[in-house]
Amino acid sequence: MSAESDTQSAVGIENAIGWPLGSALGGAIGALAFGLLMWVYDPDTVSAAIPGIYGLDPVGVVGWGIHIAHGILLGLLFGLLVTRNVFLGVIMTSPETGALSRTGLTLRLIGAGFVFGLAIWAILPLLVLPVWIEAIGTGTATEFPTTAIESMLGHVIFGSVLGLVFALVTDLRSRSPGTPLEG
Image (cartoon, rainbow, N blue to C red; front, side, top):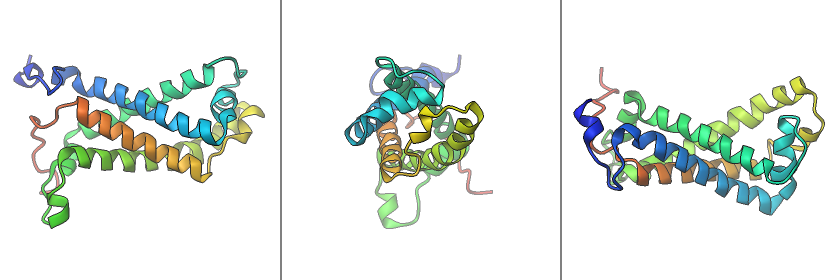
């Protein structure tokens, strides 16, 4: 076992399991925040449209369960990406500009989450979902608000909350990614 996996984070979670736990927790909390926004704008999106994506009937809290599961999976993808040396190096690089050099790792991870949420919105509901709905041929999910401003805002909130929770739970300060931008 490496010395890196033996170090403790600020909340007592070993780094070896810290990023998956921080990612999953951040994804679940981010999905909850996004789900609450959708619930305010249109409760049927959570209760009917999300199960409809899979051809399921809107029964009970199935939509919420699927939505939180999506958040956890996307959170794990985020954690996997930001802990790789190339992305972590960019996040931890000290830029030469005054404003960016004063930002801490937490703020940078929130920014990375924001960008991740925006990318998820551009890829999943705008590109993948229409193809998926056409492939399964369900009419229930056709009312899904893919391009609505609420969808974009929700994905950005999801990513920002994900980045915040990830930064609070996962200790990345002990990691040294090197300098990926210098060749």
